[in-house]
Length: 187
Image (cartoon, rainbow, N blue to C red; front, side, top):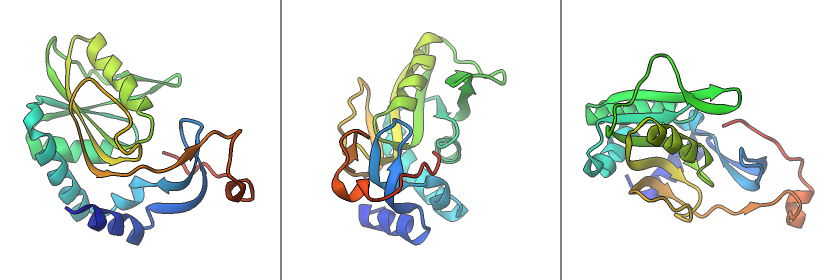
């Protein structure tokens, strides 16, 4: 799938928002990707999942893990396309944890799948979970990499849409954002 085609789907589904947004990291942005809206269409989920799975297939992962909530839908579809097991991390007291009886075997090759990355905080938390349990991170697959590839990891990164979306500290906002009320749409 071409980058412009992906962007068009985000625009048409109302998933690419313009305004003044508070990101999970605390940073501010003029654009927000509400992937849940883009992933309402099961044929599109299947297509995104297939394309992302094809990019990440070389990682040779046995299991796909997604940080909850955003990565669940796309993570499960990538796992289905790869024919692998799917598990997810979820918030417990504000931090991600593995629950529900999910386990990771020592040296099990894990692919982390996330919907949107700006700074990679949830992915970093998931990496720690995998490594603390003795697993091996085989790669990270991202539907939308907002960092423009600026987040650096020690394993392969695969993304369908890579953009460098401007972010700002709340203390250093450009004039246009200072005039717009900030909203936190949820991630």
